[in-house]
Structures are given as structure tokens and as C-alpha cells.
Image (cartoon, rainbow over all chains, first blue to last red; front, side):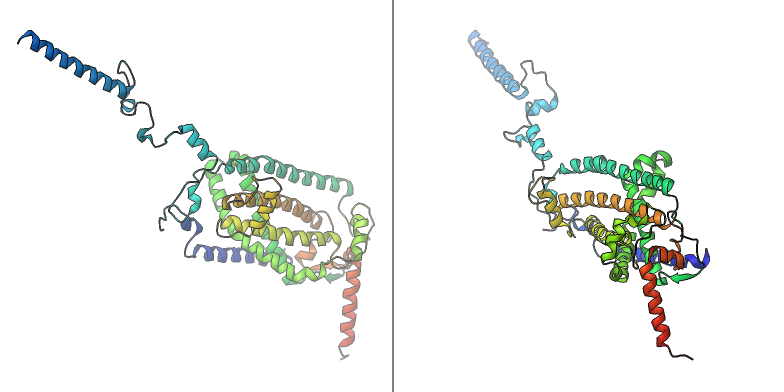
Length: 44
Length: 367
């Protein structure tokens, strides 16, 4: 396999990296939609 | 005590007993005063008598039909206690959508099997020449695999959400299936962004070679030579079949992305609000404006339907690019394809590349 599938591995790794970055950004956001729309929030 | 006084006392006591019995009879509703504690307090009515003239059944019927009350919290959706459309959504998802998808994927696999059985592998006419020509550079191949690997993860985790409980859970057991589905759904959410990046890059890299031209009509008329050995309709860099795949991936990819984002961020992102209303106007839904929750339910059904068709199309793409055709997989693995293969399937493109090569050779001064 070696060289012939180098682009496959690069693409797969890129997919994982983008996924991890997306996860970090989404989880790091200040408020999730579940918290924002929770009925435990009684602010008028 | 005199008789008169006795009669008076007896009379007063009798009246008191009668009043007491009347009161208890009114409270218990039973002539023999034989009732439970709760009924003794309410005489069989709803405690507090809050429902007025409505019975409990009538109130529950209104709740079940989605009546909205008043809430003082920011989330106005909470004013609707029960959204019975969810029952319809679940019935459609687990019924017609699942059945359609299952039959579609099975039909695709059977059709490809039959095609392979009758046509066999499409071989290079005259055998490979041993000389190669660059089909895709390293960036193009990397973008292809970025999109492809993301798609595989999304497809498998997505199929698990629809069919996993019927197919995998009996095999794996509840605990392992639950863990697999939990991490699978997280992967589905995050790898979606990898897929979106891949589709955008593909669009940028290949759109200029995927506009329809007159050769596509001849290619379609000959069914791409798929059903006749030795038949090779003319084609530039991408034939009509590949252009269909390109535009399908881009357009269906955008559709999946928008519906998927609606599902990931319900009530916050509504990119499909107008589209959902359009579908609703056809009479499929309740008619009129859709609530946010109804839009999310429409997005979920749409996402599942388009996803299932997407998987079926890509199964065909994977087949023809690997098992179905000799010399095809090299285009996206090494990037170098056999020249005879290229002349068989993309003759006009080979001529363009050779002409460019000749022009560049002429432009360079002789050393």
C-alpha cells in the first residue's frame, strides 16, 4: 500500500482533526441550546 | 326532670341528629355514610373544583391535541404540554421512511450484483499499456478522501440511528449497543463538519470541469458504454455519470448540511423554515405555518430520506470506482491512471492534457 494510499490517510486524518476542532468549538460555547431553552430558566 | 323538659331535650337532640346526618350525607353522598376518605372530602368531585364545567377527559383531550396555555418563562414552547405531532413523526420515521430506505439499499445492492454477474468487470480494452497520466493531484485526492471517509462515518452512524435497534441491538445487547450509539451520534455531529468542508473544497476544485456539454448527450445516449463491451462514448475530464455524482454530492450535501444543522441547533437555526412550509402547503402536514418543533420534525424526516438516497447513490459510485472497473481506483489512490484506460473512458481529456504538455514543451527553450 504505502505511497499509493498516502492521500487516503491524509484525508482521513484531516476529517478527524476537523471533527475534533468542531467539537471543541461547539462544547466551548457559552451556552448550549438545551440550557437556553430549559424550563429551569425562569428569568422573565 | 319533668316530662315536658324531657320532651324538649329529646326534640332538640333529634333535630341535631337530623342536621348532622344531613350534613354527612351531603359530604359523603352516601345514605349509609360508607365512603373513602378522599371521597368524603370531595364528594367525588375534582379536588378544588378547578376544572369548572369541563370533565377531566375533555381537558386531557385538549392537552393531547396540543392546546397552548400561558407560561411566564422565556421558552414559550413550554406552553404546549403535549405535541401529538411527535406520534406522527415517529410513525413516519419508523414506518414508511425506514421501509423505503431498507428496500432502496437492498435493491441497489441486488442491482449491482446482477450488473456484475451479467457485465462482469469493465476491463481496459487491449490491456493496460504500462504508461500513466496524472488524473488527480495530491490535493484533489486528499479532498476526495476527506469527503469520502467523513461520508462513510456519517452513513454508518446515521444508519445505526434508523436501523440499529432492530439489527445490532439483538446481536450486541443493550449496554454495548447503547454505548456504540452514544459515541456514534457524537461522531455523527462532529464529522458532519468535516464532510461540509470536503464538499465545499470539492466544489471549488472541480466545478469548472463539471458543467454540462454536448458530449454528455452522446454519453447518456450510449449509457456510458456500461452495457456494451468495447463501447466508449467521448468524454472530457468528467463524463455525464461523474457529473451527476458531482452535482448530487454538492446539492444533496448542502441539503443534508442544512437539515442537519437544523437538528443540531433546534430552535436556534432555521435554515429550512421556508422549505418546510413549502412541503406543508402540499398538504402533507397540518397546513399553515409550522411551529419550530414541527419544522424540526420535518427536517428530521427530510434528512433521513435524502440520506438514504445519498447512501444508495454512493454505493453505486464505490462499486464502479473499485470492483466494477479495472484501472479506476488508481485515479484516487496514486493519482496516476493507465493511458489506455484514460483513452478508453476520457479520450478528449487525454487529448487536452497531451496538447497542454506539448505547448509547455515548446514554450521551454531548448537547453
